[in-house]
Length: 150
Image (cartoon, rainbow, N blue to C red):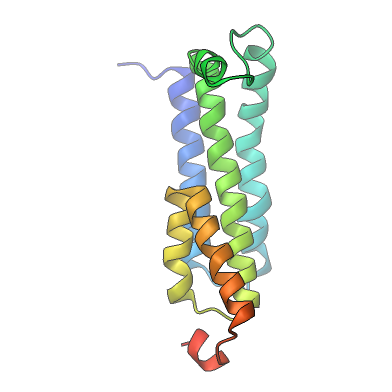
């Protein structure tokens, strides 16, 4: 079975995003290039086919953003469905990088960060919400540094 352009873009972008998440989870963030690659380079690379798909398919597409039915109609076009997926891949990685950077600044151990980052990867807004609540709790009840860095 031949791979279509849509399949190729889907697979390549997914692999790029996975590379970003693996870097974020496993590489030392004291290396300045790690957060630059996960927060800027990979999302920008994913944004290239996203932008092309939007430019080619969006203007003539049925549907829109005015109602749920309009959004459903919009995503009947495979090119726009793929663009929506690329949007998720790029922005979830940007948010994951933001969470990692702020968690590092708060001196939260990488062991505690890992589940947060996995939630951001798998369930973007839910992972972000958990981190936001954790950050709020941290500011209200600051833990001793040795507890967070354990």
